[in-house]
Image (cartoon, rainbow, N blue to C red; front, side):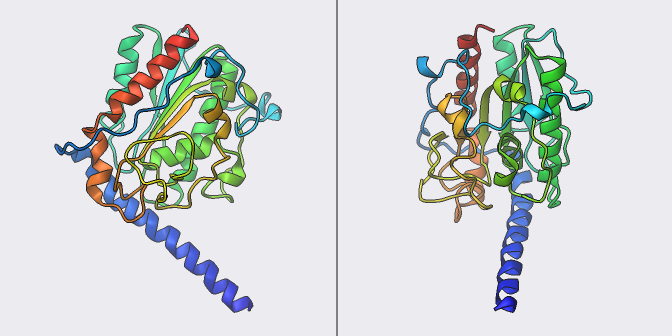
Length: 287
């Protein structure tokens, strides 16, 4: 019986390793983009009056920890003269300055001249199994430090592919993260409240049943890695702060998909939808 459990555990680990290798081999191709069209994906959830950015976020399904308020998080790099900070978590192998999300961040900044700080998260974004955990650690620290050093600044999080896994896991309590034995860091409640909008694309931890999904996805299919628990980000969903785009047949967020699906975000209009979602949230917040 013990040997059977050991073998099952080894098989599970092998599946995770294989999935990460596949992710790493596919994501750099996304930089090539695609000229293919296709049906318009489902739009992002619209911000409603009941989910106003000025309202207090829900306490359940929103990561935060009062005991982290006094921790020394280090220099977050935030600019207190900017009312909004857009943080980009790039996909595997993407350039820091020229990935899927850079035009999204630029469009958001252009809509609010002089008010937006744009930051690319400094993490490996490689196929190494520690890359996601490194990204989560870095993002949690950045959010925690930002809450201390720039408490009035609101945060927008953008994540593509591995970067989407980083964003989703950083916002989740440790038990919901891909590597439950990785960082146990949890940022303070202030940081959670300051998250104004979250937009993810091609998330390998996509859960087809989550309420905040958008795109041409099949709800019966999940991402290549262990799907994120639907309650992990439920607080952000209830407050209308998050959207997770998954294209039809995207091999990363839809098991059994194809590579072309993962490149479709470059041309399917979801980047523009993401910009609209974020800018509407910023306008509604009075920033």
